[in-house]
Length: 310
Image (cartoon, rainbow, N blue to C red; front, side):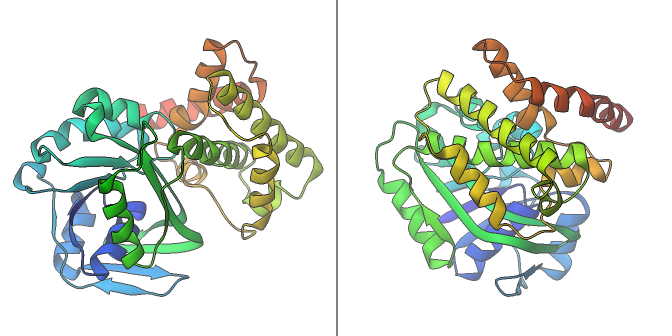
């Protein structure tokens, strides 16, 4: 398969690197110093699963120069999804399909509006990693995992082919029965640990171990679950308990990407991870007081950072 990784940051760099290492035809869409470093030195990945390097990387900042594409993994930050969707158009063939590996639940619909629903699958990933330096990805926690599937729940040949590519790369991969349910199960987790982590400014191991903040974790999970169910998402009743149990298994020093971005004074996924729950709660008349509090507390910093960039 010719697989394009649109957004070669930590997530795209890791999973695209694993696919390239296994011999898949991978093209990275990257930019800036990260792209320049990959052209000079290839891609270096430092990982708890074993370090590896891709000495020669196919990478460009011009999607219009890429053709004959089978699958596109969208690995940008959530506020770039719409822009990425428009940039992807020149790479699209009749059978090209797109898989967003985002933290929220809105990316498939955003991409389908631009590219057509028939070209878009739902998807998610789990991993803790970051860019250590240009061209250098550091994977620090969580067993790398990807899941994707057709939005209409059918089992397709194209999804199975991509699954085989990830299996050949040694990545834990799954095609869930309902990708929408799987995406919301991840959303329970990531919105909770991102929000509580960003407001407390401590790693997961700290805020899960104190009764006061653990109660906040449980409330955040319950509210997100209620918003999902109100929309007709058939989350299992045990989703909250299972997610809390999963949080308890993570390394003490684990920090979510949104939390890390806020701590480092960078733009974050606050709107898609926390703000989206607040908005959906208002739409379906589901109270989300904790998410609203977190969102309003973090919003001034988010706006300040973005105004400085603008």
